Image (cartoon, rainbow, N blue to C red; front, side, top):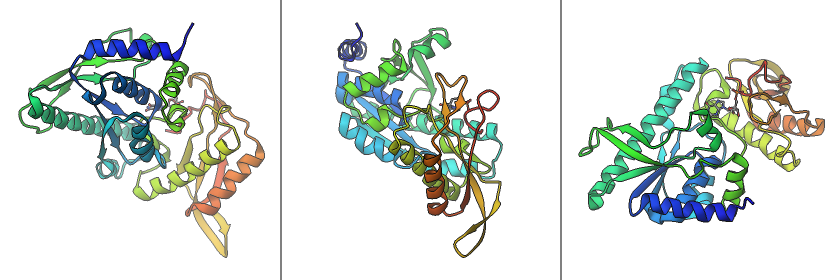
Length: 327
Ligand code: XMP
């Protein structure tokens, strides 16, 4: 029967056989899949692995620290963080349309990651003439089925002004999670001693808080949303509700203002939306009936502690017709 220890031992053998003495790179997202995939590869080949984490400024409170400190302490991986916060903010300036935001974030992300990759390859070539030739991906079994089962290689174009690289680089993919489901990946992560904040993390979209601000993304709005989101997450966890909700997007309606009365006077602030959902697979979802006292606590804390917010509203729409995210 299934046992995380056996899967780890088996995968470590396979990874060693595949990579040999080669060099390997892995992008970390802060999510569970890439974290577990990288930890397995590190267990197999140690410092032949280098990990790259892009801080696009759309992360939640504490996520960068969790990767840079907690994850690194637990695994010992070699990690490079690329601080791309300004680059993403500049690229998103003036943009409100959800699809345009997604495209910009995706494009900037690939650019940033490929630039880091190209730099690291150049560095590895300089080192001993042996370039990084393997790329770790946290592909799970459902992704394999959905995409028709193909695997093998990935190309990156070296249009990044790094001297001495061939025009097209081909990586061999390392995909140690290809036979696994999400709950199995979590079990393996726990067995490997990864931080619970990463292993137990609820789904969070790649474009991050960028698609939870309805309106233009700015540094101030991101700060505000990060505070509100951290309060909601803290109180949901404190109430022991993490296992009842699939995820709870917290959304800032940046283009909406309403009148409030706070302290000595009237305010004209923004609403925050709570979107707690229950789901099996995110294809359909129901809004979670959270206890009123927990909702009250979250609402009080957000309106008291987050400047610029004077109203908290609850989204009571299932999927369909509403998507889980607002954008
Ligand atoms: P929707 O909003 O379509 O979301 O009901 C379904 C699930 O997918 C997540 N989501 C994303 N995940 N990149 C991701 O990695 C994305 O662009 C993205 N958009 C939505 C969402 O959080 C939910 O779990």
